[in-house]
Amino acid sequence: MVRKHTRRAAKAAYAVSLAVAIVIGLTTAAAGSAAGKPTVTIGTKNFTEQYVLGELYKQALQAKGYKVVDKSNIGSSEVIDTALKSGKINFYPEYTGVIVTDLAKEPFPKSASATYAAALKWEQKRGFTLLQPTPFFDSDGFVMLKSTARKLGVKTIADMKKVKSFSYAGFPECRTRITCLLGLKNIYGLKQVKFVPLASISVYTLLDDGKITAGDGFSTDPQLQTGKYVTLTDTKHIFGFQNVAPVLTKALAADPKLVKIVNAVSAKLTVPAIAAMNKAVAVDKKLPSAVARAFLKANGLG
Image (cartoon, rainbow, N blue to C red; front, side, top):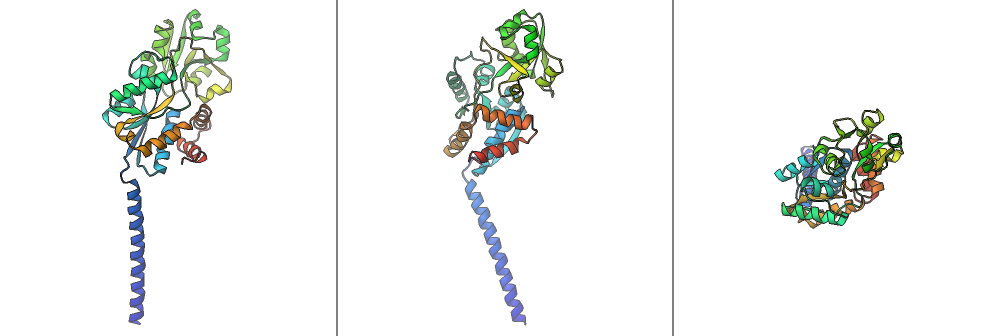
């Protein structure tokens, strides 16, 4: 009887030791799969499209075994650039025209490719670099209700010169940007504009409520697909060329697998794709993480 119990105990001990060995083996394998891979700390700015972009890059990298630290909703380009320089993040998606005109304070390039080249050159001088740009671009735009545009008789931003006074809403950083309020004042000569800084209320809500004449919208905003609003033509091209390119440290960019993963995601981001994902989050109230997961899965990237 004692011998029988001893055999049972031995078998139980063996089973436990085998299970432990398997767990240890799996843990070791998991650790080994991440060995040599750098930790990616992804930052995003403070609006819907950035949240979606951050989730897309994060989940695609995680699916290939990279450890990713998520630091979303950091703030404006100026704020997130400070986070990059301080080492708090080492990767974030940025708009190429913003890099050139708002961060580097350089003149407007005359094409999307020239804008990317200028942005890349500036980032490399600072010790960073860019990966491939997205097919989609997302430029600021002078947006108003169609009914207001008809009433004022305006089709271009230059037409606003004949309007005695008007209000224009935008994020606080719009006030100091040549691609926003400074461009309207200094390049278009619209000195009569009254600036309204946005906080938590959408520019479209303010337009609908009649609290502003116009505002700083973005070309991929889902609201613009409704036909209710119009974007005045930017004849002086103050809004520039705004394709997205991931900004990252040269150390991260030295990892060819990471570069391949990120570039594969960027290549799929067309205007219809990003507009649909923006709508899913901003209008349909889905989580950016869920929207990104579905997109990556559908494109074989998750």
